[in-house]
Amino acid sequence: MRARYRFLEWTLSAVPGMVVRHLGKCLTCAEQSVDTADASDAQTWCLKRAGATRHSVYELSAFQYFDATLTAPAAAGSPPTA
Image (cartoon, rainbow, N blue to C red; front, side, top):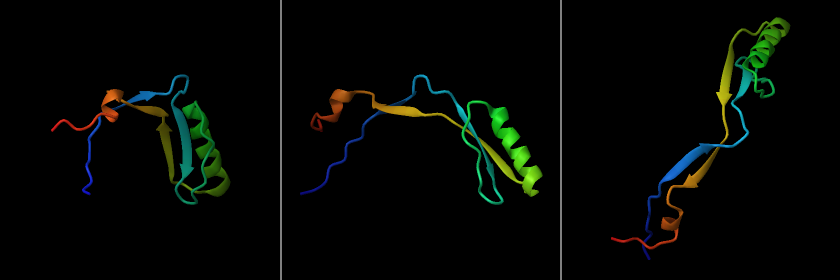
């Protein structure tokens, strides 16, 4: 039996009620802040960490949670047409 591949269209949508989150990370030792809704809290963590450790390379990331849903859910269970 040969495998069949079907390509389906998906859509991403932001999870309702979830705001963009921010995270500070020390690139010297890999310690990271807790994720927070306020970017300045993550920046403050980086500055405090720099003062305490003298580590000087940091990364500030922003991320958001998404749901993936099929664009045409009925197509998922239907047989291929060609």
